[in-house]
Length: 106
Image 1 (cartoon, one colour):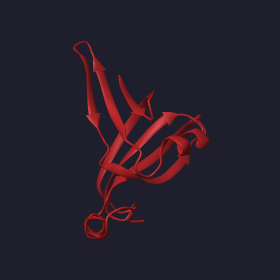
Image 2 (cartoon, helix red, strand yellow):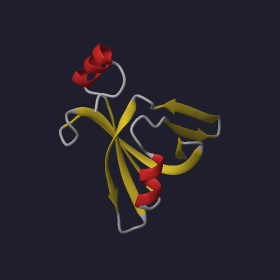
Image 3 (spheres, one colour):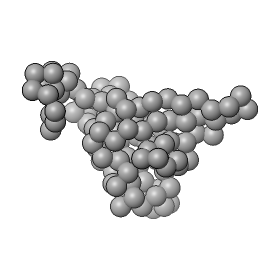
C-alpha cells in the first residue's frame, strides 16, 4: 500500500515522477493523486509543505522524505473524486538565488 503524509495527515495515493518536467519549468516533479477535493488539496499542499511517501508491506513501513519537492504546481480535479497535485524541486537557478539572497525565491 502506498500512502502520503502531509501536515500530519495520511492519505492513500498514487505517485508518478518526472525528471526535467517540461510542463513545470524543467524541474523534477512528482504528481500525487489522492481522493480529495480541490480545497483540501490546496490547503494541504503549499510551497514548502513537507510531505513523505509511505510504503507499507508485510515487513513494515518505509518512509521516503520528499521535502525536496517543495514547489506546488497545478492541482487538477478529476471526475472520479480525486485530485492530482504536482510538486516540484527547486530549479538550479532558484537554488542559486536562494543561496545568494536567502529566503523565498518566488
